[in-house]
Length: 254
Image 1 (cartoon, rainbow, N blue to C red):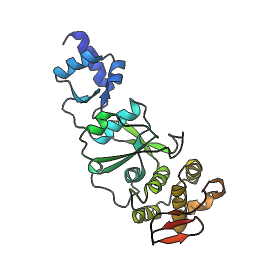
Image 2: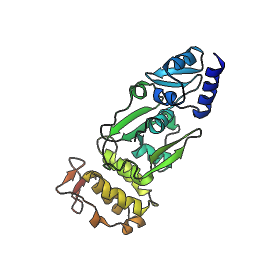
Image 3: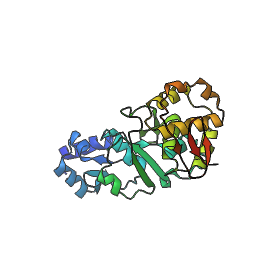
Image 4: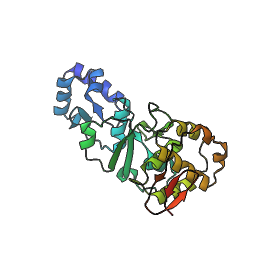
């Protein structure tokens, strides 16, 4: 490798957070074009993990390192959501011993597909991805950052995560576990909750959220203004044989 290519490589490695993925477009922006990337692969500096995606040689990857790249290099809205975000915040009752090997829930905007390299890579975790316009065009609403050591990624705040979890019940997540999780969420920010409920497009999620929040009599509930929230019309059912709440017109587990 000549001096110029080695200089480009050194600059690249300084800009590339450890344990993350680099995609071809980002490499191009750093002067590493296709042929040069191939040279670095042959020289053993980087390894190809899929079409147009690379990692540093000898480094291990987990789902968060791939997600960093989706957010920072590909400008995607994909983020840890629902139960996974609550686990990261320490708000779920059944926190896995090792989140790298957990079942990871990611939400992204409607019609925002994951790149093939991310879907095909053998992450240690089981990744479930949900494409939904839950908050319409407000893809950044209620997100916060989480530090993974070498890099940070955006994840749902506790307020957004529990609304997303309500959206996942009962098809993909358990009502009983949601009920237990909601019982411990005593410090949610009412202004953020209010904005999320007003922007949320899922009638079921909003009704279920309010039903459980009032059931557990959290102090922040008194600061909400339900009159500004569109709860839709008609009944919603989460089970075939359950309790019907007439206020929110929803059938929930007994």
